[in-house]
Image 1 (tube, rainbow, N blue to C red):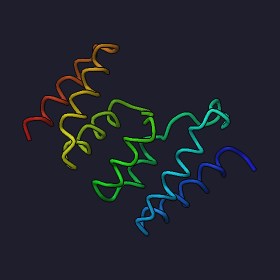
Image 2: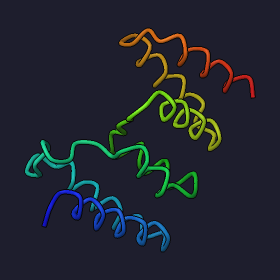
Image 3: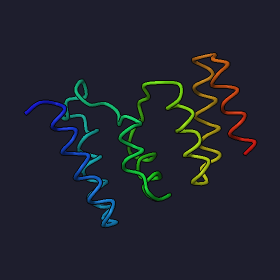
Image 4: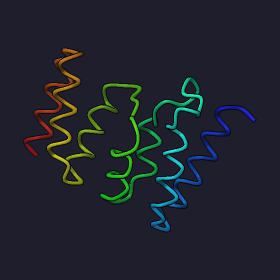
Length: 120
């Protein structure tokens, strides 16, 4: 079984648990994924494209924020993540993530995009 199959299987299990609002199972899976005994070289964050597929409610997003790191593959995904945070009422989290990101990466596109999202 390769890493891609494992990710796909885990994603499906998480989707089902979230759909059933079985957050105990969701947390158990995420705790196991990010425990020190799990091979963090293989999976050390949830890709944002997977987060988009999983998150259907504010609670879904909150569970991800509390238990996982989110990895991005493009600037557009970063801005989509900020938009998702704002949409579900996590404005302070969005600002905190933005401040942390900008302290490490000074990118005018992300700064302008975030400012536009805040004005919505």
